[in-house]
Length: 619
Image (cartoon, rainbow, N blue to C red; front, side, top):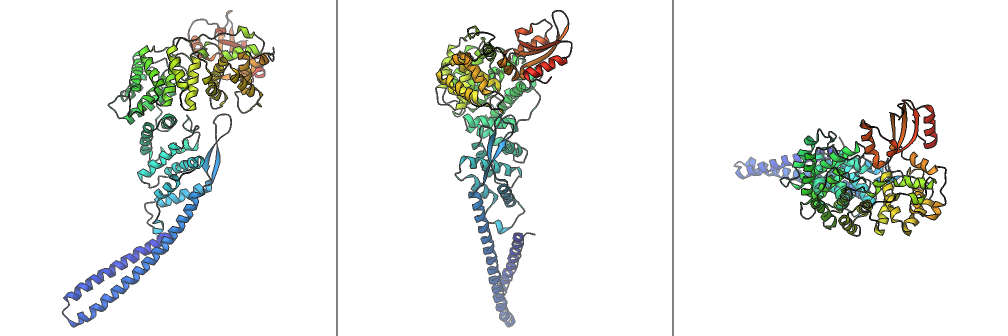
């Protein structure tokens, strides 16, 4: 038994002894009133006095013990105060996130160990010690989370508090909600991705496995409604990654079974939180379907189901909830994945009427709407056109590679064909000029570029994408293309600065090389003077795009079996795979470039050695 529990046991024993003497005193006093013999009238007062003396003695002893315990508690509070006000923060590297090192602040391990044990001990239901009589686990959490702290310290402590919940301490519900709310307040740009990258991600995931999972799920939905913009989006991402159970991948056969129950919950018959829950599940369904299929379009849904999905989502877009548009925002998020608007290809699987598109235009210009919903609507508008988006019209960067290698002159580069979408361009231009978070301006700039609008307001958002290693190669390439078409002095200056920066061996995108190709695309005289005939730029281009190299066995025009390695343009990849599945003959050169081939049904040693030497490919 610990010393503090022994002291509590002694206090309990003394209290029982005191109660016994008090009972005796009451009995003797009652007997004295009715006593009729001399012996009783003489003996009872002595017994009463003895009882009073014992009660006084025991009371003093109890008070002395309590003072000792209170002093110990004050000592603990003093030590706790020092711990709370002197928190050691260290940096932890985030694994597998981008190509350059990313860090997050966490509290030092020794501090964590002491505080976690202390909080857990305070929260134990069977710990009856008065040693902790003046402080509870809830008090400690409040001391940690309610103080005004610097951002790094606040985030580190919010992660620590979430980790404490994993041990399932005995805390009040309002304390648990405070911990969750503070964690949400301290989300950063690295949280809420598909993988558990940060300690914050891991803490939320672990709490979801504890007895607090229902409380956490409900609180996330409540906070999704109450927040907006970046915080709302992060909450939605966290909810999707840790709360939603991953089921079957969506396909034509199971579409009705998966989608209809969720769509039915998108009506006003259900609470806002229930609609948000259904919407986040729909986001996850459509997102995972594309991720599992290399972000190809969702073009397999039966038309009646697809029409129902679009109609229900657009109806939800028009629902207002206390002017915070939470339901509308989640509906647009789902629509973003339904239309594959996160990619750069035109969406023609469903033909939107102008009235339906006007619903999205109204979202774009409505400043009361969530900024994410507005930028997502801009992206959806940018692909819902029968004409090809600018980026999908040619393999622009490869064309600049050919100029850089002297294969073709700059004047022979293809020219963009501008989609006829004046209404969409008008509202999206209005959005990029408004005060919205930078990440949403980046999407807005991409939307304008797809529609062939190139204005100075797009430069900074596009440069942020182009220079940020957290974006995919395709995202950075698309931003580069639109920067080239803007092509003013600011863009040229940024490319020249990037060209002169030292090569970052960690960033496989090779930013200096792409800056050079951007200058070639613009037609910069100094860059054109550096072109050569060695095919070095083409080799580097293809080497960096191994994921676009297709291997296939086919018969050539003479009927002989041959093995081909083909670089396929991203915009034509889906058409290429469909063409391969057909029974018709195809011309491979219509989809890309054969970078290696040999006769036979397997690649021979010669072609393997060639691909290794030229592109670094291991076959």
